[in-house]
Length: 151
Length: 194
Image (cartoon, rainbow over all chains, first blue to last red; front, side, top):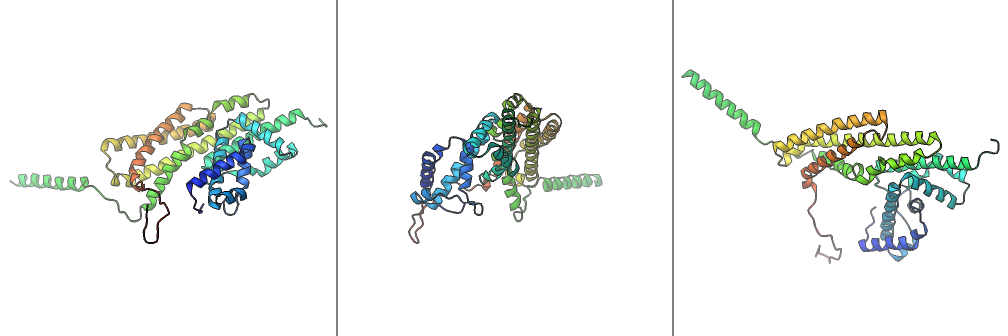
């Protein structure tokens, strides 16, 4: 990131983000996906209109990046059981058909673009690998609960 | 008399040879900067990416395996073990590769720039060799018996690798900029303040 910003503004912007926005997203997985969505794929810079107005473009960008790294680290530290729980809750919270969610997550692997810049490849691969297993566990549970009508 | 001249000449020759061999060599400074930067990169990767305890505790955490064992489907267990095995292999291969980088750096440049005693050099050489062998053994163990095959060997790899990182850090310390206060950014034109 080549924007310069005052360190105090960055801390204040990140705190603001945690209190006002991230507090409504209790799952680390939700926060990770949300924060990754505020990042421009072409430039790698984060953008949040409200934060940028209150602080500065650069402070908002760095504050978002810090929170993104935080949520990734939380997910990295989560045991597999916790990851399965988060994945289930996340799938139910987005309101899409759960089977569609599982199919698209297994095929498109959208979580691969949700990793903060500068993450070590081993940590990233570990999270992807855990998410893959968690998705399979979730899929098996779903299949057991609602067997196919033809079965 | 001739014999005496011969022995004195031989002794002088040996002295000159010993002096030449014992003379401290200086590595050429030009063109080796990238090797220092590479070594610094390897050190950073090891310390920040491959050796942090919290990440390794997660990768080799048996609670995940216990949880997977409670799942009714054998496919889940199979997938989990193959995934964790792949991660373990990535880890041990990357540790080995970064340690090799550091070893090459030590062998070719480090000792010319820092005062390392012979005892320390021998100890370092032993640690490097032992670590590379243990990494190979661990790689085989992961491949044959899975990610939970040798927790003690994992621990010993971490211990020795950390020790080598500390030694390399000392060799590369001169690359670090001395602590300078941050620029305040309130300098007036032509009057820089720090």
